[in-house]
Image (tube, rainbow, N blue to C red):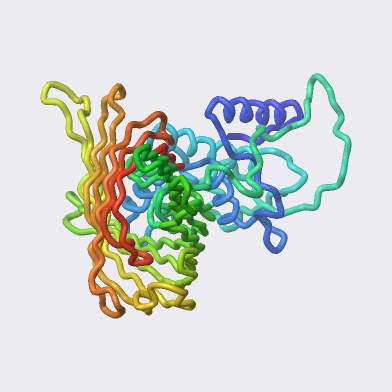
Length: 443
């Protein structure tokens, strides 16, 4: 793209880019200088990260981008400068990912070609890839002086494409699940369909004149965008079950709060031949956590390590089952396998069950299957998992916790669930056995 030679030409290019960006569904506004400037120049890494963050690239795109990187390849943020051409280089892209990549490319071209008061190029380039690769091509950060632009019909003032601000909390970074471990997957991950949910259930025993209310849920906030496979997610969780029998005092069978941070680290390993590679994604999650139990006033500080192997369409990912007479999917199923190493230290023994309230270390795993219907008229999901942990130290020698849920989806985020759990909780080792019908949600 040649540099415009006059004001009207520049305005035409800028307005054309704005229209093009809008048509592409662009979600990234020009980043603020304070977010991308360092030592008087635009930090290219910060610039690309800001644009990518606002574009909402998916988790699966981050997987594909990592798996197609050869040894010694450029960092992901540099490769993003190729825009939607990445999708022609072996990176699997959804339609939304292509639109996001195009938006990043368009916005970067806009930054490079506009005569903005905030940035001044040291070398004129209009290609995003050339700008990222050329160390001599820089954008100097200039303090903008207040000015009143002159409005004319021939040369309207350039304006960046309108878009929401990326400053402060972003709604799509919030995650709502049933257990903290499931905060690991974003909504753009295929595994989102079978994750645990925040649930609210009511049961009424009219014979015993007894009513029970139960709420279980975890709220987290990801500090990093979905396509970056390493994440940091602070969270808070609640597990509370209250029963009321007529003529008797309220009975609380479970009432815990926990506060923690879930950190995810990703390492990949490639096996096989260049013609037939097999890429194993290795996810390690570490979650330091503080849990207080209001029923017995005990408190635990824990550090839980989880290893999740990921093989595309083989393990911890959905496998489609199609009809014999066409490509239509009948259902999809996901084999679930994780390794868990839980470590806890009681900082407060509490007033009851003190024999159980001792420091512990447990090793084992979580195994199961999730099956989802691909028929939109039968939006059912069945997930069954079993946690088996052996005690390396501590009072409980074995933890077994069976959990199952049959869900009828009312929307992508809300469902009616029939659930059953039986066993000792992984965090407190307390026994649970419940069957419930609940209104559930995840986000």
